[in-house]
Image 1: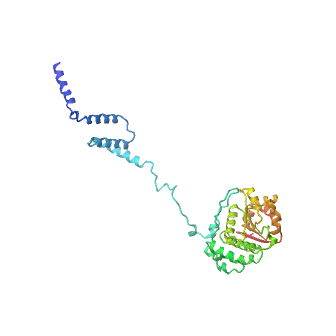
Image 2: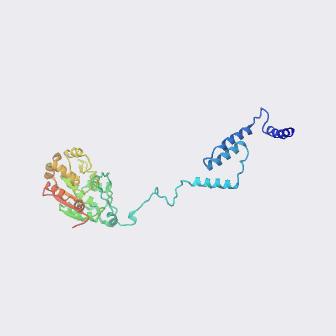
Image 3: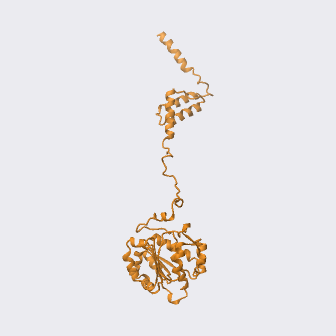
Length: 345
């Protein structure tokens, strides 16, 4: 019994005589930190990075270095840390879904090659207004300036120079404008981007400006332009507005008629006393002619001067032959007819 008691006493002395137990002025902080560290160590680590961070923070708070782990545990922690850092990062060499691609087709192909890649909008698809097409094909320009045209008024020349920034005529414009301005019919082969829109719009605006003072033309519709798509219809209307910028007393009024838009709004626009130009797709125009909206049939039959079929080949390819025959039946036989087509039969 005495021998056993003598063995227990030194063990009790070691537990009591610890260097951390001091006076009341110096509380046993190290013992509390040990209990806190023991409590943390019992929790299963969720992440190797968090475990390493917790060990470093606890060591810094205690004012002593962290315990050294074995070399195997340290290498495993470093590998896990690198995996977590690289996890979820995209690979720039493979993932290019967000990369911006800038294509300059004019540097790689001619305008004629680009024109074959135009997408025809689907039927019933709404199209946003587009700006007038710019004449950017240098090889299609002639050496003749617009200023040399004698049958063009000062207002139109000013619009060409200041609004559209046109100086030289394209080859299509140089060949067709004098013929159209003289009042003759024209069948022209012209692709998109060749300046054909200006070629038929400029004479139309000039004829309207000259007929403004005639009392017999009041309330009549002077020009009808039929195009195959809503996109093209909108583009033509925008260029009419640009060319007629300085024809302001009174302004030249244009009405667009195309599917996918409000029919009552068409009725309201056609009810205006002054409608100079109608730009329309065949289907919607035929609907208004059948219903004689705002007396449109008699106004066209009485005062139409110019009929223009833009991209006539596409009008036929898209199945508008029957509609075109019915529409032309409403129009006067004495008129100027202009046909622009990318291909000729």
